[in-house]
Length: 226
Image (tube, rainbow, N blue to C red; front, top):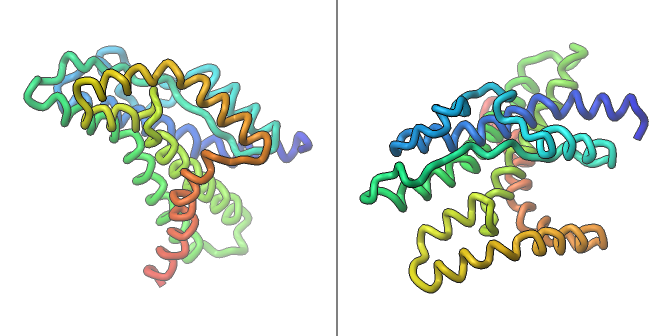
């Protein structure tokens, strides 16, 4: 990939990527506050400013490496701090579930809104305007990254959001064994990467249904609006 294509890909991906990871972390912090935990707010993380959520590796290095390798930009933000001790005992499991689910859910909502905007631009913005195609390309990536992030974080492997959602429904020995499973997470992800490099896209089978939904949404909205 030449430098011009690299810069074009960065320009295309950066807005949607930053918005996706920012909204994801903001949603965790906002729902935690609804259940009584103001940790994110006190630490200045309850914000839609991408700068406060930047993780050097996940927000800068890894997305750039992805682009230079010819992939779509992918990465993560610095996790919003949540103190579960601030949740009331009466609503502890409910709070833990919804705080965990808030991030992926926000991505699905944002991806759907991106698809709606894409349909509106496609229908109402003249195609002979030079920026129309670029804007549609940015929205297409926004749909992709939001559905990918939402789906990926639902995978029940620690420390992903899905693992905390599953833990809510476990107790006793089952919960203890599930929490011990977290120490194997690095090996699991290394195994997934090795398999992917050898053409066995195990994670792709999990993500593909969600990506497919993102693909059909713009056409669905176009048909509804016309």
